[in-house]
Length: 317
Length: 208
Ligand code: SF4
Image 1: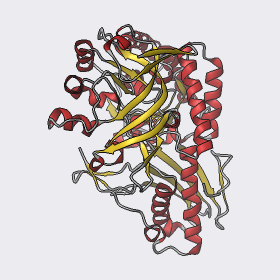
Image 2: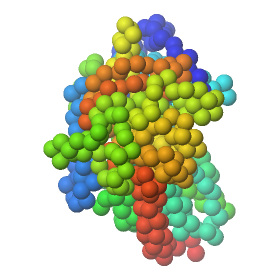
Image 3: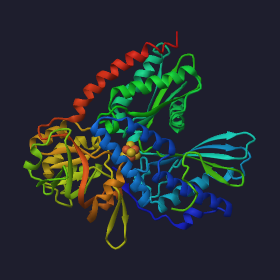
Image 4: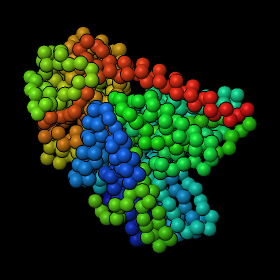
Protein backbone atom coordinates (compact mmCIF):
# COMPACT_ATOMS: atom_id res chain seq x y z
CA UNK A 1 0.00 0.00 0.00
CA UNK A 2 1.05 3.52 -0.59
CA UNK A 3 2.03 5.97 2.03
CA UNK A 4 0.76 9.50 1.96
CA UNK A 5 2.70 12.70 1.72
CA UNK A 6 0.22 15.41 2.53
CA UNK A 7 1.25 18.65 0.97
CA UNK A 8 -0.42 21.99 1.37
CA UNK A 9 -1.60 23.60 -1.83
CA UNK A 10 -0.57 27.25 -1.76
CA UNK A 11 -2.06 30.12 -3.70
CA UNK A 12 1.36 30.50 -5.26
CA UNK A 13 1.26 27.00 -6.81
CA UNK A 14 -2.16 27.67 -8.25
CA UNK A 15 -1.45 31.03 -9.80
CA UNK A 16 2.11 30.40 -10.95
CA UNK A 17 3.17 32.14 -14.15
CA UNK A 18 -0.36 32.91 -15.27
CA UNK A 19 -1.47 36.35 -16.34
CA UNK A 20 -4.83 37.97 -15.58
CA UNK A 21 -6.88 36.40 -18.38
CA UNK A 22 -5.51 32.96 -17.76
CA UNK A 23 -6.00 33.10 -14.05
CA UNK A 24 -9.60 34.19 -14.69
CA UNK A 25 -9.90 31.02 -16.76
CA UNK A 26 -8.51 29.01 -13.85
CA UNK A 27 -11.19 30.49 -11.59
CA UNK A 28 -13.95 29.46 -13.99
CA UNK A 29 -12.65 25.94 -14.62
CA UNK A 30 -11.91 25.33 -10.95
CA UNK A 31 -15.39 26.39 -9.93
CA UNK A 32 -16.83 24.27 -12.74
CA UNK A 33 -14.94 21.24 -11.43
CA UNK A 34 -16.30 21.94 -7.95
CA UNK A 35 -19.79 22.39 -9.38
CA UNK A 36 -19.62 19.06 -11.21
CA UNK A 37 -18.49 17.29 -8.06
CA UNK A 38 -21.52 18.65 -6.23
CA UNK A 39 -24.22 18.54 -8.90
CA UNK A 40 -24.70 15.77 -11.43
CA UNK A 41 -25.19 16.62 -15.11
CA UNK A 42 -28.70 17.57 -16.25
CA UNK A 43 -29.09 14.46 -18.42
CA UNK A 44 -28.08 12.14 -15.57
CA UNK A 45 -30.55 13.72 -13.14
CA UNK A 46 -33.36 13.55 -15.70
CA UNK A 47 -32.61 9.93 -16.50
CA UNK A 48 -32.45 8.88 -12.86
CA UNK A 49 -35.81 10.57 -12.27
CA UNK A 50 -37.30 8.66 -15.16
CA UNK A 51 -35.82 5.40 -13.90
CA UNK A 52 -37.10 5.93 -10.39
CA UNK A 53 -40.58 6.62 -11.74
CA UNK A 54 -40.64 3.33 -13.62
CA UNK A 55 -39.16 1.20 -10.83
CA UNK A 56 -41.37 -1.24 -8.95
CA UNK A 57 -39.03 -3.18 -6.67
CA UNK A 58 -39.06 -1.95 -3.12
CA UNK A 59 -35.34 -2.17 -2.39
CA UNK A 60 -34.51 -0.41 -5.63
CA UNK A 61 -36.96 2.36 -4.80
CA UNK A 62 -35.36 2.73 -1.37
CA UNK A 63 -32.00 3.16 -3.09
CA UNK A 64 -33.32 5.73 -5.57
CA UNK A 65 -34.82 7.71 -2.69
CA UNK A 66 -31.46 7.69 -0.98
CA UNK A 67 -29.72 8.86 -4.16
CA UNK A 68 -32.06 11.81 -4.54
CA UNK A 69 -31.75 12.70 -0.85
CA UNK A 70 -27.99 12.59 -1.36
CA UNK A 71 -28.17 14.93 -4.35
CA UNK A 72 -30.32 17.34 -2.36
CA UNK A 73 -28.00 17.33 0.64
CA UNK A 74 -24.89 17.67 -1.52
CA UNK A 75 -26.24 20.87 -3.02
CA UNK A 76 -27.52 22.22 0.25
CA UNK A 77 -24.23 21.59 2.04
CA UNK A 78 -22.06 22.25 -1.03
CA UNK A 79 -20.27 18.96 -0.77
CA UNK A 80 -19.19 16.38 -3.36
CA UNK A 81 -22.00 13.91 -4.05
CA UNK A 82 -19.58 11.03 -3.70
CA UNK A 83 -16.48 10.86 -1.52
CA UNK A 84 -14.52 9.44 -4.43
CA UNK A 85 -14.00 12.54 -6.49
CA UNK A 86 -11.77 10.56 -8.81
CA UNK A 87 -8.75 11.34 -10.90
CA UNK A 88 -9.29 14.39 -13.11
CA UNK A 89 -9.32 13.91 -16.85
CA UNK A 90 -9.84 16.51 -19.58
CA UNK A 91 -10.84 15.93 -23.15
CA UNK A 92 -10.16 19.14 -24.99
CA UNK A 93 -11.47 20.08 -28.42
CA UNK A 94 -9.57 23.26 -29.08
CA UNK A 95 -9.84 25.59 -32.05
CA UNK A 96 -6.43 26.15 -33.64
CA UNK A 97 -7.03 29.91 -33.25
CA UNK A 98 -8.08 29.81 -29.61
CA UNK A 99 -5.85 32.50 -28.10
CA UNK A 100 -5.06 30.57 -24.91
CA UNK A 101 -4.19 27.21 -26.41
CA UNK A 102 -0.52 27.46 -25.43
CA UNK A 103 -1.19 27.89 -21.75
CA UNK A 104 -4.19 25.58 -21.48
CA UNK A 105 -2.29 22.67 -19.95
CA UNK A 106 -0.97 24.87 -17.22
CA UNK A 107 -4.41 26.40 -16.73
CA UNK A 108 -6.00 22.97 -16.36
CA UNK A 109 -3.41 21.82 -13.86
CA UNK A 110 -3.83 24.99 -11.81
CA UNK A 111 -7.60 24.52 -11.96
CA UNK A 112 -7.28 21.03 -10.47
CA UNK A 113 -5.13 22.35 -7.63
CA UNK A 114 -7.59 25.15 -6.93
CA UNK A 115 -10.69 22.92 -7.09
CA UNK A 116 -8.99 20.39 -4.82
CA UNK A 117 -8.39 23.07 -2.23
CA UNK A 118 -11.69 24.95 -2.56
CA UNK A 119 -14.20 22.09 -2.75
CA UNK A 120 -12.35 20.15 -1.14
CA UNK A 121 -11.76 17.10 -3.33
CA UNK A 122 -10.23 13.92 -1.97
CA UNK A 123 -6.54 13.35 -2.68
CA UNK A 124 -6.63 10.58 -5.22
CA UNK A 125 -3.37 10.66 -7.08
CA UNK A 126 -0.76 8.04 -6.25
CA UNK A 127 2.58 8.07 -8.04
CA UNK A 128 3.24 4.63 -9.48
CA UNK A 129 6.33 2.65 -8.42
CA UNK A 130 7.30 5.22 -5.82
CA UNK A 131 3.77 4.59 -4.43
CA UNK A 132 2.98 7.73 -2.51
CA UNK A 133 -0.07 9.96 -2.61
CA UNK A 134 0.94 13.33 -4.02
CA UNK A 135 -1.58 15.05 -1.75
CA UNK A 136 -2.79 17.57 -4.32
CA UNK A 137 -4.54 15.58 -7.05
CA UNK A 138 -1.82 16.16 -9.62
CA UNK A 139 1.05 13.89 -10.57
CA UNK A 140 2.87 12.40 -13.54
CA UNK A 141 0.42 12.61 -16.42
CA UNK A 142 -2.37 13.72 -14.09
CA UNK A 143 -4.59 15.51 -14.83
CA UNK A 144 -4.83 13.45 -18.01
CA UNK A 145 -5.34 15.73 -20.99
CA UNK A 146 -6.43 14.52 -24.40
CA UNK A 147 -6.26 17.00 -27.25
CA UNK A 148 -8.21 17.36 -30.42
CA UNK A 149 -7.34 20.43 -32.52
CA UNK A 150 -10.14 21.92 -34.61
CA UNK A 151 -8.60 23.78 -37.57
CA UNK A 152 -9.65 27.40 -38.07
CA UNK A 153 -11.91 27.65 -35.03
CA UNK A 154 -11.30 30.05 -32.18
CA UNK A 155 -13.32 28.48 -29.39
CA UNK A 156 -12.43 25.71 -26.98
CA UNK A 157 -14.56 22.94 -25.60
CA UNK A 158 -13.45 21.15 -22.45
CA UNK A 159 -14.95 17.92 -21.20
CA UNK A 160 -14.15 17.36 -17.55
CA UNK A 161 -14.30 13.88 -16.08
CA UNK A 162 -13.79 12.57 -12.57
CA UNK A 163 -12.71 8.97 -12.93
CA UNK A 164 -13.69 7.28 -9.67
CA UNK A 165 -12.01 4.05 -8.60
CA UNK A 166 -15.12 1.90 -8.49
CA UNK A 167 -16.35 2.96 -11.89
CA UNK A 168 -12.90 2.66 -13.48
CA UNK A 169 -12.47 -0.96 -12.36
CA UNK A 170 -14.78 -2.52 -14.97
CA UNK A 171 -12.81 -0.87 -17.79
CA UNK A 172 -11.27 -3.38 -20.16
CA UNK A 173 -10.15 -3.62 -23.74
CA UNK A 174 -9.45 -6.62 -25.92
CA UNK A 175 -8.55 -7.35 -29.52
CA UNK A 176 -10.64 -10.05 -31.17
CA UNK A 177 -10.11 -11.85 -34.42
CA UNK A 178 -12.65 -10.92 -37.06
CA UNK A 179 -13.72 -14.56 -37.25
CA UNK A 180 -14.96 -14.22 -33.66
CA UNK A 181 -16.89 -11.20 -34.84
CA UNK A 182 -19.37 -8.92 -33.13
CA UNK A 183 -20.99 -11.77 -31.15
CA UNK A 184 -17.71 -12.13 -29.24
CA UNK A 185 -17.66 -8.38 -28.67
CA UNK A 186 -21.18 -8.55 -27.26
CA UNK A 187 -20.22 -11.40 -24.94
CA UNK A 188 -17.14 -9.47 -23.80
CA UNK A 189 -19.25 -6.44 -22.87
CA UNK A 190 -22.03 -8.44 -21.21
CA UNK A 191 -19.59 -10.53 -19.16
CA UNK A 192 -17.76 -7.50 -17.92
CA UNK A 193 -20.90 -5.60 -17.00
CA UNK A 194 -22.60 -8.45 -15.14
CA UNK A 195 -19.49 -9.09 -13.07
CA UNK A 196 -17.49 -5.92 -12.50
CA UNK A 197 -20.30 -3.57 -13.51
CA UNK A 198 -22.36 -4.75 -10.61
CA UNK A 199 -19.91 -3.20 -8.15
CA UNK A 200 -19.55 0.06 -10.04
CA UNK A 201 -22.62 1.71 -8.56
CA UNK A 202 -25.33 1.05 -11.11
CA UNK A 203 -27.45 2.41 -12.78
CA UNK A 204 -24.54 2.68 -15.19
CA UNK A 205 -23.85 4.57 -18.35
CA UNK A 206 -22.03 1.96 -20.42
CA UNK A 207 -19.46 3.07 -22.97
CA UNK A 208 -18.48 0.64 -25.70
CA UNK A 209 -15.63 1.38 -28.08
CA UNK A 210 -14.95 -0.45 -31.33
CA UNK A 211 -11.78 0.06 -33.35
CA UNK A 212 -8.55 -1.37 -34.68
CA UNK A 213 -6.34 -1.65 -31.60
CA UNK A 214 -6.79 -1.94 -27.86
CA UNK A 215 -6.10 1.71 -27.12
CA UNK A 216 -8.26 3.15 -29.91
CA UNK A 217 -11.15 1.00 -28.72
CA UNK A 218 -10.51 2.12 -25.13
CA UNK A 219 -10.47 5.76 -26.09
CA UNK A 220 -13.66 5.32 -28.10
CA UNK A 221 -15.29 3.76 -25.06
CA UNK A 222 -14.32 6.79 -23.00
CA UNK A 223 -15.72 9.14 -25.62
CA UNK A 224 -18.89 7.07 -25.52
CA UNK A 225 -19.52 7.84 -21.84
CA UNK A 226 -18.88 11.53 -22.51
CA UNK A 227 -21.74 11.52 -25.01
CA UNK A 228 -25.15 12.56 -23.67
CA UNK A 229 -27.54 9.94 -22.32
CA UNK A 230 -30.18 9.24 -24.95
CA UNK A 231 -27.96 10.19 -27.89
CA UNK A 232 -27.46 7.61 -30.62
CA UNK A 233 -24.62 6.47 -32.81
CA UNK A 234 -25.00 7.77 -36.36
CA UNK A 235 -24.43 4.35 -37.85
CA UNK A 236 -27.69 2.43 -37.97
CA UNK A 237 -26.20 -0.91 -36.95
CA UNK A 238 -24.22 0.64 -34.10
CA UNK A 239 -27.34 2.44 -32.91
CA UNK A 240 -29.23 -0.83 -33.04
CA UNK A 241 -26.49 -2.49 -30.97
CA UNK A 242 -26.76 0.29 -28.40
CA UNK A 243 -30.44 -0.47 -28.04
CA UNK A 244 -30.01 -4.23 -27.89
CA UNK A 245 -27.28 -4.01 -25.26
CA UNK A 246 -29.35 -1.61 -23.19
CA UNK A 247 -32.36 -3.92 -23.26
CA UNK A 248 -30.28 -6.97 -22.50
CA UNK A 249 -28.41 -5.47 -19.57
CA UNK A 250 -31.69 -4.21 -18.15
CA UNK A 251 -33.12 -7.70 -18.58
CA UNK A 252 -30.34 -9.14 -16.40
CA UNK A 253 -32.04 -7.23 -13.62
CA UNK A 254 -29.22 -6.26 -11.29
CA UNK A 255 -30.72 -2.80 -10.76
CA UNK A 256 -29.37 -0.01 -8.58
CA UNK A 257 -26.31 -1.12 -6.60
CA UNK A 258 -26.64 -4.60 -8.09
CA UNK A 259 -29.32 -5.43 -5.54
CA UNK A 260 -32.08 -6.06 -8.06
CA UNK A 261 -34.29 -3.75 -10.07
CA UNK A 262 -36.17 -3.31 -13.30
CA UNK A 263 -33.50 -1.27 -15.04
CA UNK A 264 -29.75 -1.33 -14.57
CA UNK A 265 -28.35 1.14 -17.08
CA UNK A 266 -28.93 4.79 -17.90
CA UNK A 267 -27.91 3.89 -21.42
CA UNK A 268 -25.35 2.21 -23.64
CA UNK A 269 -23.33 4.43 -25.97
CA UNK A 270 -21.19 2.99 -28.73
CA UNK A 271 -18.41 4.95 -30.43
CA UNK A 272 -16.67 3.30 -33.36
CA UNK A 273 -13.74 3.91 -35.68
CA UNK A 274 -12.42 1.79 -38.53
CA UNK A 275 -10.55 -1.46 -37.89
CA UNK A 276 -7.68 -3.42 -39.43
CA UNK A 277 -8.80 -6.30 -41.69
CA UNK A 278 -7.30 -8.70 -39.18
CA UNK A 279 -8.57 -7.19 -35.92
CA UNK A 280 -11.78 -6.21 -34.18
CA UNK A 281 -10.92 -4.36 -31.00
CA UNK A 282 -13.58 -3.77 -28.39
CA UNK A 283 -13.45 -1.93 -25.11
CA UNK A 284 -15.88 -1.21 -22.34
CA UNK A 285 -15.93 1.43 -19.64
CA UNK A 286 -18.68 2.64 -17.37
CA UNK A 287 -19.91 5.78 -15.72
CA UNK A 288 -21.53 5.16 -12.33
CA UNK A 289 -24.81 6.79 -11.28
CA UNK A 290 -22.64 9.58 -9.94
CA UNK A 291 -21.38 10.23 -13.47
CA UNK A 292 -19.35 13.39 -13.03
CA UNK A 293 -18.68 14.54 -16.52
CA UNK A 294 -19.02 18.14 -17.56
CA UNK A 295 -18.74 20.10 -20.76
CA UNK A 296 -17.63 23.70 -20.74
CA UNK A 297 -17.15 25.89 -23.80
CA UNK A 298 -15.06 29.07 -23.97
CA UNK A 299 -15.16 31.50 -26.87
CA UNK A 300 -12.06 33.48 -27.84
CA UNK A 301 -12.93 36.23 -25.33
CA UNK A 302 -13.33 33.63 -22.60
CA UNK A 303 -17.08 33.97 -22.39
CA UNK A 304 -18.22 30.53 -21.33
CA UNK A 305 -21.22 28.29 -20.96
CA UNK A 306 -21.80 24.73 -19.85
CA UNK A 307 -23.70 22.34 -22.06
CA UNK A 308 -24.14 19.75 -19.33
CA UNK A 309 -24.78 21.78 -16.18
CA UNK A 310 -27.44 24.44 -16.80
CA UNK A 311 -27.21 25.66 -13.20
CA UNK A 312 -23.52 26.59 -13.53
CA UNK A 313 -23.13 30.35 -13.45
CA UNK A 314 -19.38 30.51 -12.95
CA UNK A 315 -19.73 31.74 -9.42
CA UNK A 316 -17.48 30.62 -6.65
CA UNK A 317 -18.84 27.96 -4.33
CA UNK B 1 -29.38 -3.79 21.51
CA UNK B 2 -32.07 -3.67 18.86
CA UNK B 3 -34.90 -1.18 18.68
CA UNK B 4 -37.72 -0.81 16.20
CA UNK B 5 -38.27 2.87 15.43
CA UNK B 6 -40.96 3.96 12.96
CA UNK B 7 -40.69 0.58 11.35
CA UNK B 8 -36.88 0.81 11.14
CA UNK B 9 -34.75 -1.87 12.75
CA UNK B 10 -32.06 0.09 14.58
CA UNK B 11 -29.11 -1.76 16.08
CA UNK B 12 -27.40 0.13 18.88
CA UNK B 13 -23.72 -0.53 19.58
CA UNK B 14 -22.20 -2.52 21.22
CA UNK B 15 -23.68 -5.25 19.05
CA UNK B 16 -24.41 -8.63 20.60
CA UNK B 17 -24.54 -11.89 18.70
CA UNK B 18 -28.23 -11.94 19.57
CA UNK B 19 -28.77 -8.64 17.71
CA UNK B 20 -27.64 -10.03 14.40
CA UNK B 21 -28.35 -13.75 14.68
CA UNK B 22 -31.87 -13.52 13.29
CA UNK B 23 -30.95 -11.17 10.44
CA UNK B 24 -31.07 -12.70 6.98
CA UNK B 25 -29.65 -11.58 3.66
CA UNK B 26 -31.79 -8.86 2.12
CA UNK B 27 -32.92 -7.41 5.49
CA UNK B 28 -32.57 -3.68 6.13
CA UNK B 29 -31.00 -2.26 9.30
CA UNK B 30 -29.70 1.03 10.71
CA UNK B 31 -26.84 1.55 13.17
CA UNK B 32 -26.73 3.86 16.13
CA UNK B 33 -23.69 4.40 18.32
CA UNK B 34 -20.19 3.96 16.95
CA UNK B 35 -18.72 3.07 13.59
CA UNK B 36 -15.00 3.02 12.78
CA UNK B 37 -13.63 3.53 9.28
CA UNK B 38 -10.96 1.24 7.87
CA UNK B 39 -9.97 -0.03 4.47
CA UNK B 40 -7.00 -1.62 2.69
CA UNK B 41 -4.01 -0.52 4.76
CA UNK B 42 -5.86 -0.89 8.03
CA UNK B 43 -6.61 -4.52 7.21
CA UNK B 44 -3.03 -5.06 6.22
CA UNK B 45 -1.72 -3.61 9.46
CA UNK B 46 -4.07 -5.67 11.61
CA UNK B 47 -3.81 -9.00 9.84
CA UNK B 48 -0.37 -8.71 8.22
CA UNK B 49 1.62 -6.81 10.81
CA UNK B 50 -0.42 -8.10 13.74
CA UNK B 51 -1.11 -4.67 15.15
CA UNK B 52 -4.17 -3.89 17.27
CA UNK B 53 -6.82 -1.57 15.92
CA UNK B 54 -6.28 1.90 17.40
CA UNK B 55 -9.91 1.83 18.54
CA UNK B 56 -11.58 -1.24 20.00
CA UNK B 57 -14.14 -2.65 17.58
CA UNK B 58 -14.98 -5.85 19.46
CA UNK B 59 -18.79 -6.12 19.20
CA UNK B 60 -18.53 -3.05 17.03
CA UNK B 61 -18.98 -1.86 13.49
CA UNK B 62 -16.41 -1.21 10.77
CA UNK B 63 -17.10 0.55 7.49
CA UNK B 64 -14.90 0.02 4.46
CA UNK B 65 -14.67 3.67 3.53
CA UNK B 66 -12.23 6.33 2.49
CA UNK B 67 -13.92 9.46 3.74
CA UNK B 68 -13.39 13.12 2.98
CA UNK B 69 -12.66 14.68 6.33
CA UNK B 70 -12.03 18.32 7.11
CA UNK B 71 -9.28 18.97 9.63
CA UNK B 72 -10.55 21.83 11.76
CA UNK B 73 -7.02 22.34 12.99
CA UNK B 74 -7.86 22.14 16.68
CA UNK B 75 -7.61 18.37 16.91
CA UNK B 76 -11.18 18.05 15.67
CA UNK B 77 -12.30 16.59 12.39
CA UNK B 78 -15.50 17.01 10.46
CA UNK B 79 -17.01 14.33 8.22
CA UNK B 80 -17.85 15.73 4.80
CA UNK B 81 -18.44 12.62 2.74
CA UNK B 82 -18.36 9.02 3.88
CA UNK B 83 -19.57 6.48 1.36
CA UNK B 84 -18.42 2.87 1.36
CA UNK B 85 -15.62 1.62 -0.84
CA UNK B 86 -15.41 -1.71 -2.72
CA UNK B 87 -15.35 -4.39 -0.04
CA UNK B 88 -13.85 -7.02 -2.33
CA UNK B 89 -10.41 -5.48 -1.87
CA UNK B 90 -10.59 -6.49 1.79
CA UNK B 91 -11.80 -10.05 1.05
CA UNK B 92 -8.47 -11.81 1.47
CA UNK B 93 -7.96 -10.25 4.91
CA UNK B 94 -11.47 -10.46 6.26
CA UNK B 95 -11.56 -13.88 7.92
CA UNK B 96 -8.48 -13.06 9.99
CA UNK B 97 -9.68 -9.55 10.56
CA UNK B 98 -13.01 -10.67 12.02
CA UNK B 99 -11.22 -13.28 14.12
CA UNK B 100 -8.66 -10.88 15.54
CA UNK B 101 -10.89 -7.87 16.15
CA UNK B 102 -14.23 -9.45 17.09
CA UNK B 103 -16.06 -6.98 14.87
CA UNK B 104 -19.76 -7.82 14.44
CA UNK B 105 -20.90 -5.72 11.53
CA UNK B 106 -18.93 -4.87 8.41
CA UNK B 107 -20.32 -2.22 6.09
CA UNK B 108 -19.10 -1.79 2.55
CA UNK B 109 -19.90 -1.79 -1.08
CA UNK B 110 -20.64 -4.77 -3.28
CA UNK B 111 -19.96 -8.44 -2.87
CA UNK B 112 -17.48 -10.35 -0.73
CA UNK B 113 -16.58 -14.03 -0.90
CA UNK B 114 -15.68 -17.22 0.97
CA UNK B 115 -13.25 -15.71 3.48
CA UNK B 116 -15.83 -13.27 4.73
CA UNK B 117 -18.63 -15.86 4.63
CA UNK B 118 -16.53 -18.17 6.79
CA UNK B 119 -15.61 -15.36 9.19
CA UNK B 120 -19.25 -14.30 9.54
CA UNK B 121 -20.43 -17.84 10.15
CA UNK B 122 -17.71 -18.86 12.56
CA UNK B 123 -17.46 -15.73 14.68
CA UNK B 124 -21.00 -14.35 14.41
CA UNK B 125 -20.73 -11.34 12.17
CA UNK B 126 -22.52 -9.91 9.13
CA UNK B 127 -21.61 -7.88 6.07
CA UNK B 128 -23.98 -5.16 4.88
CA UNK B 129 -23.91 -2.69 2.05
CA UNK B 130 -24.71 0.96 2.24
CA UNK B 131 -25.86 2.13 -1.22
CA UNK B 132 -22.63 3.60 -2.50
CA UNK B 133 -22.27 7.06 -3.92
CA UNK B 134 -24.61 8.50 -1.30
CA UNK B 135 -21.71 9.78 0.70
CA UNK B 136 -23.32 12.98 1.89
CA UNK B 137 -26.29 11.19 3.43
CA UNK B 138 -23.83 8.88 5.15
CA UNK B 139 -21.72 11.79 6.41
CA UNK B 140 -24.87 13.46 7.66
CA UNK B 141 -25.56 10.47 9.89
CA UNK B 142 -22.18 11.10 11.57
CA UNK B 143 -22.72 13.33 14.59
CA UNK B 144 -19.11 13.59 15.56
CA UNK B 145 -15.69 12.15 14.84
CA UNK B 146 -14.44 11.27 18.29
CA UNK B 147 -10.96 10.17 17.33
CA UNK B 148 -8.68 9.98 14.31
CA UNK B 149 -5.83 7.48 14.14
CA UNK B 150 -3.30 6.09 11.71
CA UNK B 151 -3.41 9.28 9.69
CA UNK B 152 0.09 8.46 8.50
CA UNK B 153 -1.76 6.25 6.00
CA UNK B 154 -3.39 9.33 4.48
CA UNK B 155 -6.87 10.71 4.97
CA UNK B 156 -8.82 8.05 3.05
CA UNK B 157 -6.99 5.23 4.84
CA UNK B 158 -7.15 6.52 8.41
CA UNK B 159 -9.25 5.13 11.25
CA UNK B 160 -11.95 7.59 12.26
CA UNK B 161 -14.19 6.70 15.18
CA UNK B 162 -17.60 8.14 14.35
CA UNK B 163 -20.61 8.60 16.58
CA UNK B 164 -23.59 7.98 14.32
CA UNK B 165 -27.35 8.35 14.37
CA UNK B 166 -29.51 5.93 12.38
CA UNK B 167 -26.73 5.22 9.91
CA UNK B 168 -28.36 3.51 6.94
CA UNK B 169 -30.19 2.00 5.19
CA UNK B 170 -27.89 -1.02 5.32
CA UNK B 171 -28.81 -4.16 3.43
CA UNK B 172 -27.55 -7.45 4.86
CA UNK B 173 -25.47 -9.19 2.20
CA UNK B 174 -23.75 -11.91 4.25
CA UNK B 175 -25.54 -13.25 7.31
CA UNK B 176 -24.41 -15.29 10.31
CA UNK B 177 -25.26 -18.51 8.47
CA UNK B 178 -22.74 -17.48 5.85
CA UNK B 179 -25.38 -17.00 3.17
CA UNK B 180 -24.30 -14.50 0.55
CA UNK B 181 -26.87 -12.24 -1.15
CA UNK B 182 -24.72 -11.30 -4.13
CA UNK B 183 -23.50 -14.84 -4.70
CA UNK B 184 -27.06 -16.10 -4.91
CA UNK B 185 -28.17 -13.18 -7.07
CA UNK B 186 -25.24 -13.62 -9.41
CA UNK B 187 -26.35 -17.11 -10.32
CA UNK B 188 -29.63 -15.59 -11.53
CA UNK B 189 -27.90 -12.72 -13.31
CA UNK B 190 -25.44 -15.03 -15.08
CA UNK B 191 -28.20 -17.24 -16.38
CA UNK B 192 -30.18 -14.36 -17.86
CA UNK B 193 -26.99 -12.83 -19.23
CA UNK B 194 -26.14 -15.99 -21.18
CA UNK B 195 -29.63 -16.03 -22.69
CA UNK B 196 -29.37 -12.38 -23.66
CA UNK B 197 -25.93 -12.84 -25.25
CA UNK B 198 -27.41 -15.63 -27.37
CA UNK B 199 -30.25 -13.38 -28.39
CA UNK B 200 -28.05 -10.50 -29.55
CA UNK B 201 -25.42 -12.73 -31.13
CA UNK B 202 -27.84 -14.01 -33.70
CA UNK B 203 -28.45 -10.45 -34.86
CA UNK B 204 -24.93 -9.06 -35.17
CA UNK B 205 -23.33 -11.21 -37.86
CA UNK B 206 -21.95 -8.11 -39.56
CA UNK B 207 -18.70 -9.82 -40.59
CA UNK B 208 -19.56 -12.45 -43.14
S1 SF4 C 1 -18.53 4.03 -8.42
FE1 SF4 C 1 -19.10 6.21 -8.54
S2 SF4 C 1 -20.76 6.53 -7.06
FE2 SF4 C 1 -19.76 4.57 -6.62
S3 SF4 C 1 -18.27 5.06 -5.04
FE3 SF4 C 1 -17.20 5.12 -7.01
S4 SF4 C 1 -17.34 7.26 -7.69
FE4 SF4 C 1 -18.83 6.99 -6.05
